[in-house]
Image (cartoon, rainbow, N blue to C red; front, side, top):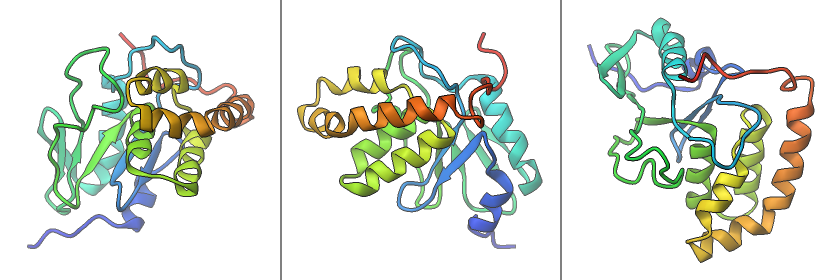
Length: 188
């Protein structure tokens, strides 16, 4: 039996308030982390976040192929959880050395998704996608800003809309939808 590609209908079964997918050309999945951040917070996928996503994929027959890859006997699409090389690593580097097929998805924290989008996009689409992300999964804007200071081109791009994003996120985290929302599981 030939495996099929995962499509929007299957993603509708997976997505909820804690899971947000960005399809082609990005192939990213964001798992809700928290609504409030400190710039020094560690940015990593904790076991509760990983298990939450795996449980959502059970109905699509997904299970661990290795310690960081979920695969299915029905679908050819794999979900890859990139490994942090070091705890304080930049959210812009998480996928730098990871390989994936054209149908595969990276599963990341919201801040890591934002870093990926900032590196991959320019213009209004970038701001729209970042606001789409923030509206469900707030990001650590200060951590992004700190890590961008070493890349002049990206730093200028990010600073051009930073205040707008900060104000947007400030309103979102006060909204009824997110005001009382807590993180998935415990940290340590």
